[in-house]
Length: 341
Image (cartoon, rainbow, N blue to C red):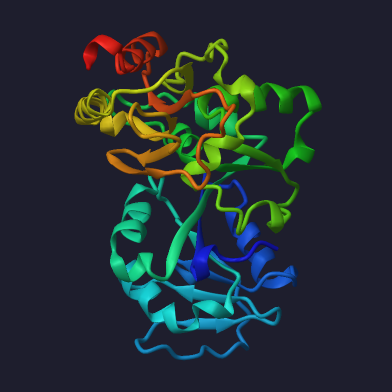
């Protein structure tokens, strides 16, 4: 079981399609597993079956906090999320993790933004990962659903945002059907880890406390991620992932201008972005960035470039209507050139 990042409490955001098994997953965490002490934040208790005999403990405000037999806690978010998390601050170290179940919310960006930019939140919590539950039997129908022009397919969006995808109900499909589905999910979001489950019984050590949302997780990608691969043949899949890599040192000012222009024009279409960068004039400092829509976090990596390491820039873009050739050309134009001195 991983320890908390610098004493902070990890928050895992759970998204998922209707009927994917989120309620079953939450009930499994609250009642059946015994290794993890987790606080589950629910929009409404009605989604989760809570034993009638349990007595609610009190917080500073009239939020319900119900303790289960296995030590897990279920809390109803009846007001602002910041307020609820603020009230939990004094007890947060009792939990290995906080799980935020987002009923009906396809876009977790506001939650990520709040935790990362609100000082009271960032001093106590960090986003550990965004997990999407997907029903192996029915997710294809959700992905194929044609929305009115201008509307986003929420199923595609949820897959695009995820760091991890819980592919649930695998016992209801054939191995061939499962492979086809996994191949399709990879075209939408290549960097998400897919974890297969039955009846939402997921191994929590593969989901919680792993810092999967971390900017530096790009360092762990399979090298094949950055090779060209055929995009989805499904004409409804406007969302896809693009990986780009090339050697050299970037010109900091040119790269900043590129990113500013890209976000100004395409922020709504860019669900996730990540990068590993080498800049001219920065010595051995390796830089990483990651973004959710227009919010970008940027900074030095924990480890510098090794003496014999190839200075290779890596970029990940997940979003709507991405053009690999245009993105590659624009990024390579940001390379430092001797005559630019």
